[in-house]
Image (tube, rainbow, N blue to C red; front, top):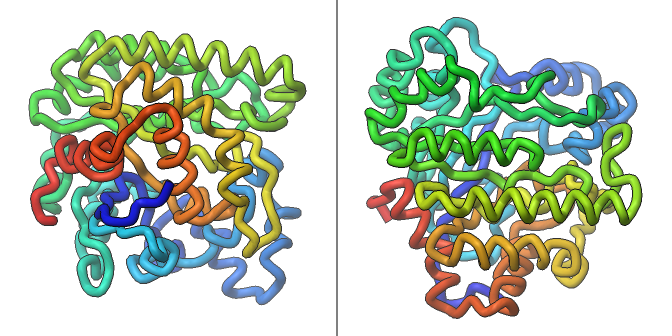
Length: 358
């Protein structure tokens, strides 16, 4: 199933330049610029948890800008994109505003897809969160909400920002979240699947706030082993799927939650990483991701799913074209018609992110 005849909004991409802007991975990028050694050396230098998460360090040591995305999009008819924050590392409580301002300055719409919306960084539990939101909004009229580093995984060898669970349901986070809801801004929830009940609690606490679950909850290890003990055998992977399925069903009962069919090609899911330049083909992807997509369509419906490529993070596994085709095919085989695909690949993103410049 292809997307011929449609125009698409890619609701989850990342733009970065680790050489000129402060990113958590800027040090590695600058090292490889200064010392001309094979990029694969990064696989030896980086901790295992980072290697398993990125799959291939190549995208992270170079700038990824509008023209790079345009080249990767290929024949996928992307008309607009949504930028999602990514590891900005500036200092000071208002530092994340620098990313919003930087993204707004990039040459989108110049022989490239238009910039439809910006999701910046921010932590509702931090002091001065309301002031940060106001600064984001002042930095760009396309600012639509925040994403917070709250990911936690019980396997200590799986890359995560937090060492303990519960960040989304702490009193400080719940109290601060009100500033987001008051301004009509959205929240992007990127969590590992074990944290889905936390997202459900948050959605119930703020039923009028729009929450977008990133990457269907990222069930790390569902396709193969990662970390110390995650996804080590088919039985473990089946248990992981069942828990993910049940927790996603519970989350979907909250009508203020949308779900992104994105990030399904992240290496941390346990995909084998193919040789560079040889993307995993569509039939192989279909076999892996179809059960996830079919359940998501069952519980959220076509009017609450949003497609995003998650590029360049998913690039080590496959191409944007292969990923989009695999998602569209899996959904079509489960009953999604042309109208449903138009919602998932464009309409829902325009509605949720208030995109009116396309």
